[in-house]
Image (cartoon, rainbow, N blue to C red; front, side, top):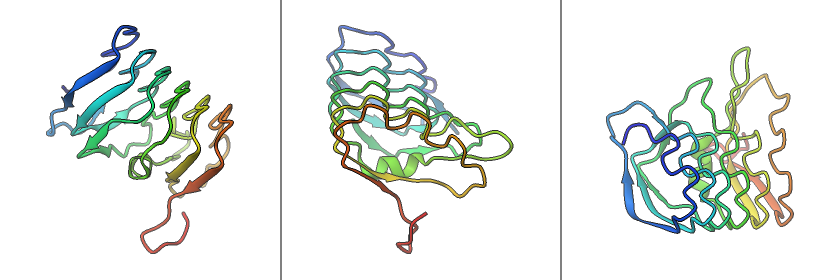
Length: 172
């Protein structure tokens, strides 16, 4: 798969994907906008392989019953000024945890005259079952306004938000 935008969008009858989703490793980036958006009964995705995400906005938006993210094998994010990661987990009411290594790779990037649609914008909005968000990676930038607009709205159980650290252990 090279472009998975809206691939399973609104598939109310899918409860589990018991197969691996394998992307073409030779591609520079892959569009997964709304790939699983509004799959309200989706509980399980086995594995996603070779995802080099760039346009990942709303990828899991509205996956109300998804408790855990799939295993991501050979995952990276295409580092581009306008990569869109907004609303990534929006309305994932049952999501319990997000692997730290996954969050570190996503990173909140703001660059140039325009801020990108970063992981910060509404990404965890309405994730009512998350207890902790660990590994949020903020890249250095002079632009900080609206960096976390609506990011943690209605995350009533979150007790800890822990940001990633540099390799030497100092905070970003």
